[in-house]
Image (cartoon, rainbow, N blue to C red; front, side, top):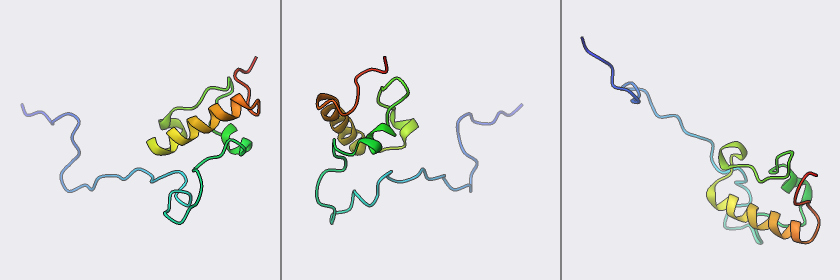
Length: 88
């Protein structure tokens, strides 16, 4: 009895590409300034859960570089009291 290999894609089927960067217009070389600013409160809130935790990369769809900039911006906004630390 022959068994199929586990975890392999069938031959001839192309790999599926995941979506690119979440903010491609801000990652270009022409873009001046940070990817995120602590002053963009509405944008930062999109990456927070209901308990004001920072979403993970899988759920938010951001790259590692974007997540680093996002995390820094959220922490600055929390320090400036623009975004709360907790939901309570």
